[in-house]
Image 1 (cartoon, rainbow, N blue to C red):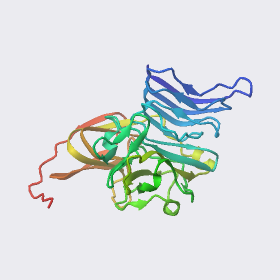
Image 2 (spheres, one colour; image 1 turned 120 degrees about the horizontal axis):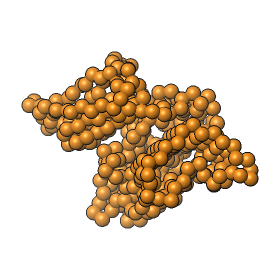
Image 3 (tube, rainbow, N blue to C red; image 1 turned 90 degrees about the horizontal axis):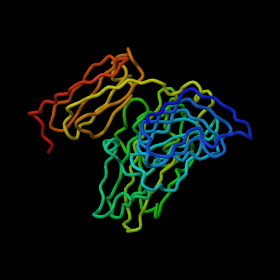
Image 4 (cartoon, one colour; image 1 turned 30 degrees about the vertical axis):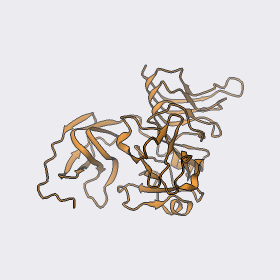
Length: 340
């Protein structure tokens, strides 16, 4: 079943309040719910189970204090109101970053350590000791020094005016046996330097609520233990009511598909033609075959950078279309390449 809901505003009162804005009993696919506002809710803004996949929730506001429990696969949660749990969820795959606001001035972003699916694998990288890695209960075991898991946020987060000066919340066993680092893309592409994921560093970052940001988080084992386990990494953000209201996520987007990509290809798509001011709107660190991204800037100019070791870099000028488009990519071997 494909389900879509937009632009709903209801106040159910204290007697007739629904349990959820959106919920399912399983075996659903391609659910999109956008710009829905309902208070109060008796239980939560959303409740979904793990036999459902491909869920998008954008600007879905229930009560700020109610948890959002979405166990569906390949789930994206951006904006809206509610809290998140920090207990690993069983048999949930491809659902990683989520974000929601807990008031008009505060919110949180979380990374659930769920195993990637084919759709999200290009946004991750890892190294695990034999027999270690992801559990089916929503966690990752990094038992040997140097084991790591990196996950990159797939979609830009808007509406945030900055990161709070609050220490990140880490859920798991032996959190002190790990290092936590991040790279940030606040509109100009990801930084090349890993920074420690702590309150001071996050608080120093400059974020525009209209441009947004993406983040890449790395968790690495620094002290070996067979009981090491990380389930969630969460950090707090600050916002304003105006930032939330004036930077809603677009209702309609168009797809750009790139086909024929060589293994280990990096793709970065930008809005604007001047590299000094262009804004990255999508990208992936490591993919092959076909890569697709969505945008809402039909008619605007930009460019796409395609890079892979052993092949010449490609810069593809583009006027973003108001319809879905597909481009076959032919990467030419770089005869002067030397990876020594």
